[in-house]
Length: 248
Image (cartoon, rainbow, N blue to C red; front, top):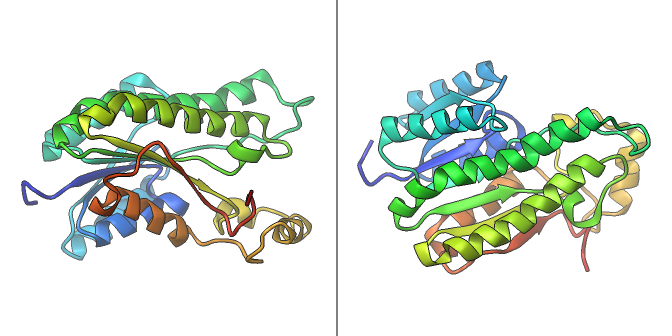
């Protein structure tokens, strides 16, 4: 790779929305590091395809909720490429349930990955992002963090926390030329929405003015804009991509 080629990390970057983001950034000339926890086959397939098409990519296994794993992830990127320019915190899990029935363990697991995991990745990535001279952090939240969602007290709390955390990091790092923004997807067609019943899908569509679910590429396009030079004067903002569902 060229010494000037920018390097982007996408956590959870081998499947679903994360894969769309990884593919979009790759197509725009980034070296892309996909982090995964369990999706090794998908991650290896992404790297194989990228290399076959003349791109530069790397897959690194790490549990982003574990500090030592995150430290190893960032160290691997720096030892492999010598720089890190863009971080996309996309990895996340769901363990839904009504609050009356949700266990403390369910709550803790979601917070550990979806909130603390984002904090850990940002913390360990800040120094190399400062060295980049124009670092970008793009955190993937959810409309659930803005409006709540039935059966997702843990998930909504984590995503709301990501939004507040991102604004704080944006203020702290502005003087170091690092921008920090959030993308909050609505209903996007992924394996997660595929599991929903037809009745739930129909109910969701009634709340969406555009009357359709979004595609992973809709999120990827917003991320690629925020990672580009075109967004150098944008920081601390939350961009909702939901077909108008949370319009207010």
